[in-house]
Image (cartoon, rainbow, N blue to C red):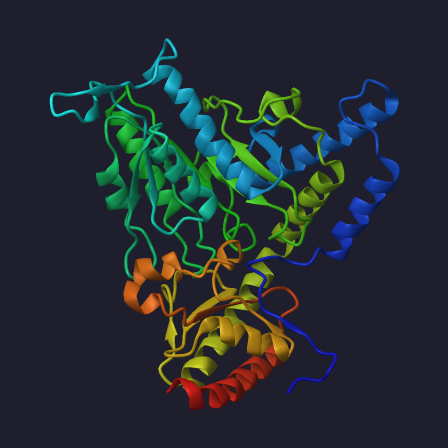
Length: 419
C-alpha cells in the first residue's frame, strides 16, 4: 500500500497540471491586464499587444505566420472549426447559388437523391470524438460523404489506404497525429505527400489536410511546413497549460468559413472576447514544452520501456495495445484478460493511483473502446478490460514500481471472482 498522503497520477493524456511558471504569467495578466483587447483605450491596446505577442510566439514555434494562428476554447472547437469551416466553404463551390440537394420521389415511391455530389471527407476509424462526431453529423444531415479508413492492427493507418479513399469530390483529409487512447503515431508527413501528389495530378481538385495534434505536441516535431499540413489543432490542457484554451493553425489561403457568429475577433473566424490569460498560458506552456522536449522524451522513453517490461513480466496474459515502437513515449495501454477495466480504475484510485480505462471524453460511455475494437476483436473489446497509463513530467521510477505492486495486489484479490 502507498503512504496515506502519496498520490500517483498516471492520467496525463487526459489532463496535465498547470506548470508553476505558466501559472505565474497567467496570474500577472489576470491581475493587471483585465481590459478587453478590442477596446480602443490604452489599457485595451496593451491587452491587444499581449495577445498578438502570444500569437507570434505560438506561430514562431510552429514555423508559421502569426496570421495563421486562430485562438479557440480548445482542441474540440479547433477540430470543429477545421472540419465544418472547410466543409461550409466547399458547399459554396458545390452549390454556388446556395442550393442544396433535393430528395425526389422515384417510381418506386422511395425518395432518392439525383444528379449531385456531396463534398467528401476522408478520416480514420480511431479519431477523437470531436472529429468522428462531426463527421457522423455531416453524414446524417446529408452535408458530406465520409470515408472512415481502418487502421492496421498496430493502430497505424496505411497512407496507401488514404490514397485509395480519395475521390473526385474529396475536399478534406483529417488524420490525428497521435492517438489519445493507445498513443500510436500516424505517418502524417507521408499522408501529406499522398495529398500533394493527388492535388498535383488533379489541378481542378484541391484537398486540404487537417491533423489533431493534441496528444503529439509534447513529444513530436511540430513544424507545420515539414509536416505538410494545412490545419492543425491543439490545446493548453495537455501541455501543462490552462484548460479552456486552444488554437488552430490555418495555413494561408486555406478557404474556411466561420461556424460561430458574433464579433470580428480572431480574423472574423472565432467571435467572442479573447481569453487573454489563457492564451498567454498556452503560449508560455508551448515555449516550455519545446525547451524541455528532447530531454523529456529521453527520460519518458526509458520509463516507458521499464514499465512495459515490468508489466509483461508480472501480469499473466497482459497485452500491449498499439504498435510497440511507433507510439508516444508516455502512453502505455494494456489489456488484462477477464478483469473489468472500470473496476481496476476504481481499485487503483482507492490506493491513490489515478489512471484511465479509455479516452476521458468517452469515460461515461458504457460501450467498449472503439479504438481497441478497431485493432482487436470487437467482441473481446466489449468486455472493457483495458486500462491506459499515461506518464508525465512528475512521473518517477518509484511511481512505476508502486503502481505495478498495487496492480498485482488488486489482481490477486479480483481473480477470486473473475477466473
